[in-house]
Length: 584
Image (cartoon, rainbow, N blue to C red):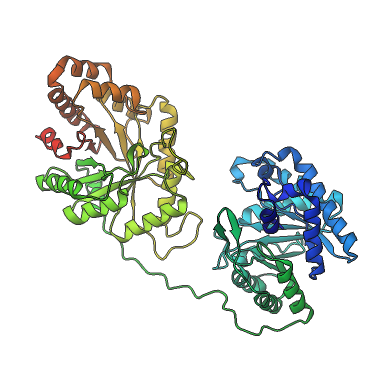
C-alpha cells in the first residue's frame, strides 16, 4: 500500500495519513488488489504506531488512523463482493528498544487491540529486522488478542536480517503455537525472499509466507521508483515459493495489481517453476589470518618505553607535498616515534585522515594514529573506511566524537553521529572480533589497536570519567588526553580514577607561542583550560612569549614523564618542524 500511496500523495506526511486525507484513494487501491485476485488484503496501518506517527506529529491520530485503516478495508471487501480476509498490518516501532523500555510491548498490544476492535480477521507482524524485537512483538500481541498471527522478517540477499539473524533461526524461534505462520516480506526482491524461504523450510513445521518487493528501489527527483519487474517474473517467483512450501504468497513494496494478478494465476494453476532461480550463493571460504605482530606503539607501551607523537593536520586540498615534507623532516630527526593525524578538525573538510596516514606511513616508514570521528559518516561508511585502512596497513586508530559542525553551515553538512566515540569504539572492536556492527561475519578479524580520547580538565569530571570507563568496556586499549597545561590537572584526574590510569595515556602538550592565542584557547575552545599561572607567564613574557611557551612545554613534558606513558605534541600553526626546537 505504501508505494502507490506515497506516489499519489507526495505531500502526505506518511502513507498511513491517507486513511484520513484520502480514504477514497485507499479504498480504490484495495479494490484493485482484490480484483487482481488477492485473497488477503492488508490494512494501511504498517507504520501506524505512536512512535512512527510521532515522527510526523501524528501521534495524536494513532487511534483514528488505525480504525480508519480497518474501516476502509472492510468497505472494500463489501464493495467487491468477494469474501477476502482482512489482515491488520503492524510494523516495527522504528526505534531502539533501550529508548522505550517496558513500554515497547504495550505499544504493539495497543495497535493490535485497535485493529481487532474494528474487525480484522488476522494480524501480520511484518518487515522486522530484529528477531529479538519480533519475539517481543509476538509476545505482546499474543497477550492482547487471540486473532491468528503471522510473523515476518525482512532479509538481505544472504538470507540474513541486517541485525545478523539467519532466516532459519527466525523460523525455528516460533514453534510453540504463538503464530499461525512465519515468513519473509519486503527484502531486496523475489530472489532474497526465496533464499530465506529455502532456509526456513527445514527449520520449522509452521506454514511459510512470502511477500516480495518489486526489486531494489531507486530515488529519482524525490520520488521512489522500483525496477520494472515483469508479471511473468513475479509468476515465476510464486511458482518457486509454492515449491518451497509457502501457503501465503504476495507482493510488498513496489508491487502492483498486475504483479498480484500474475501471482494469482501461478497459484491457481499450482504452476511448477519453469526456470532455475539461484537462491543462496555459497559463501566464500574464510581466510585464516596469521597472528598479527604488535605495532610499534603497542610494543613500546607494553615495555613501558616512553612514546612521543606529533599531531599533523591533513591538507585542505589534494596537495600533500608540504605534509609529507614535514613528516619526513620529523621522522629523519630520530626524535619522533609516530604521528597522530586529525580528522577534519573544527568540522572543516580536509583530506581524509586515513588516506593521509597511509601516505605518511608509505613515505616515512613511521606509524600513524589516524583520528576517526562518526560525525561525517554512517556506521556502514565507517566500517568501509576501516576495512580499507586495515588493507593498507593502518593499525592504530583513535576513536573520537569530533568537533560538531558550526551553526550556519549549508544544508547537507550536518553531523551524522549515528554513534558517538563509545559506539565507534564498539564498531572497531567488533571488526577485531571478525564481525561488523550488526553481527555479521567479515572475511577475517582485523587487528586494530584502539585508542580513545579523555579530558582530565573536563568541567564535569564525573561524567568524563564515566565515559572513559565506558570506552574501556567497549574495547579501548590506549588513550590520548586533551591538551593539558599543568601537571596538577592530570594528577587530580589520576587520583579520581584510583591513582593510576587503567590504560596507557599519551598526554597532549601544545607549546603556545603567544598570550593572545592562549587567551583564545582558554575562552573559546571547548575542552581546553589554561591555568591562570600559565596565562600570567605568557602575558609577562611579552614579545618573548614564544620562548616562554617552549619553556612551559618542556616543563610539562618533564612533569608528565612520570605520570603517563608518553605525549603527543601539537606543533605551531603550519610549522610542524618547529617542535624539534622543543625537543632540543
